[in-house]
Length: 578
Image 1: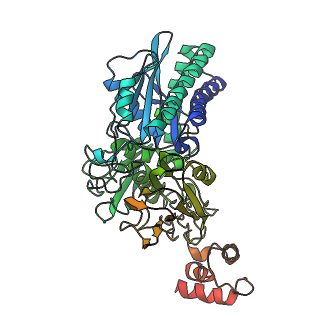
Image 2: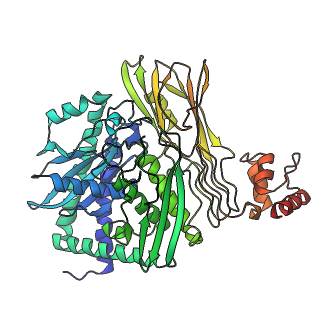
């Protein structure tokens, strides 16, 4: 093995990441669907030829796909009978290292000088994969077949030629099929870009050197993770979080997280969590593991991502719980919602012991809303998919960010101008969800309010969200963040889903509207320790009402001057302390 100097190692490391970044950019720029091109719900990576282990992932990719794409690639390796240059496998089976059915993986063998050298893979969120409702988020599904078309690893491309027969099977089972070919070609083209760039990297630096660097980077990532874990005192720590309901049975699901730190490793035990559920909030094992990986990466963000990063993290398979879904359990909510509750349970377990590295819980929902219908003016069907932001939790030294992306990724809300151009809708409101930030010495950030009105035709709406029953957890005495709220308005009145933020197949007509308010982040630290002038500023900006300031922070604000009433504030805080 060649001796590696730090500069060479850094150059190769960044070269591998750049290959993935270019795949990401090619995918985004050529994708047809706004959920990929605008909301950035996708990822690209390089994986080891024999093991499928992660070598590098693009910096623009979703963190939740870090683990799951590794497992999907391994499933392809296990099932591939033969591979040739130009082959591309398609797979979305959640039980084979996936997430939900809408996250479609393309996996391509990469050959260098005639030999299989690695695998290139990407994931793109397709707007629809069939199933009982447009968009795939069937809140009431009781088996995976109701959620859409499930694809085991099959060759969609053979020697660079698209298999028309397999394509016809796929297109015959999904909505807006005529619009999918753009995303398919974009996804395949991104892998072609990766193939070209990785070949250039190997040509420039040599196969032996690049292999040596990959091996060394894995060792160093493991070493760095172990060094960070060593900062945590030895012991067993307990955290809990809850999913509102499974969409079918209106009872909360408990995630019981025990984190044991010993030496340079962390062990995660979720065996006391709720049993498998009827509805679609089960999580497949790949997503459960990936949720823990991303939670620890949130705590130690400076550690580079490759297979070595995960080696000190031992996740006991939570068999017999809803966090280890097996066929035919429905899973449409696992990646977007349950994964965030898992991460939240990890944060909750560790925040007391490493408060300087952690934070109160963020909004913790992707706000999945799908509206599917027919636009008479354009004479075509559509499926509109909305991801929404929420508040981040407060942390030592600062308030939480407002309208931030979800815990599991960097996806953003598609610009409302784009959605109004693509689909027959109008956004009547897009504003800050005032009052939703949890009180604390450092308050949580705020969610958003939006209201969508249907302008033409008729449509069906479905949503799988969370934190409608319980707000994001506060930390170290901070209050929980505000909850998620959904309502549908029509001439017949206002409809609120029985499961608060999960429902499906809601019929909407012209003029009807859907209103959503996303959660705020939890507060960090005792609210009584928040400087009164900071509370007064929040009130002046409209974040809280005067009554909310008095109730949450024990700070009295003069309604005329807007200044802090020092004497009244002192009395409030004295009473609260007693």
